[in-house]
Amino acid sequence: MDGKNRIYDEQGNLLLLPNENLLTKHYFVTMNVTESWRSFYIECVIAMEAGPFKCFLTNQRVVFTRRPNPYKAGAYLMTPLGAPEGIAKAYKARMILQAGGFEYYELFFRDIRFYKVFKNCVDLFIMGDERQKNRATISNHGAKPALRVPLIDLLINKGIQSK
Image (cartoon, rainbow, N blue to C red; front, side, top):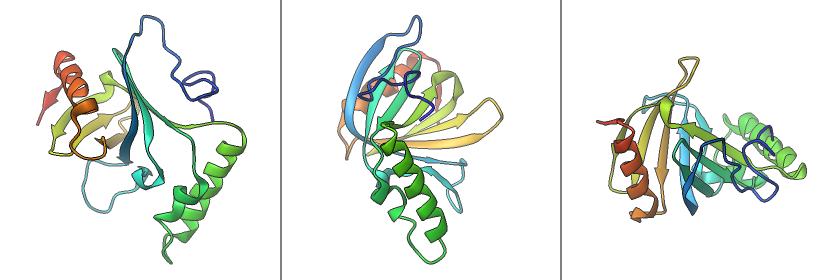
C-alpha cells in the first residue's frame, strides 16, 4: 500500500520518476522473488503462485504491480508447517485489496549485480542498499520473448554482466 500515488496510480499504472521514460509494458508476467541468491532453503518474498503481474520497463527501473488475491496469496503455503505464514500473507493481501491498493515490486537497475538467462526465464541477482540479497526470477508464461528481449537488451546496455 505504501506505493499508492508514489509508485502506481489508482488503476495500478506506473507513475514515472523525473527523467524517466516508459519503454514497454507487459501483462501476465510471472515473477518469483526470494530472500537469497541460494537455491535451497530459501524464503519466498513474492510468490508467482499468487498471480501474474503487470510489468513496466523503464530506462531506470522495472516495476511490477498486481491486484492482490487473498486466496492465492498464501495458498501455496497451506501445509501443516506453512499455514501460519500462509494465513498472514492472505490477511495482508486482503487488507491491501480492501484499501484499493496493489502489490508491487520495484527494482532499480543499479541494484542488479548480474543475471542469468534460461530458456523460459531470466534470473536477476539483486543486492539492495542494506546488503540484502534477493533473486528475482521473471518469466512471461513460457518462452515468449516479449519481455525477455527488451529486458536483456537493457541489462546489456547498462553494463550488467551475465553469468
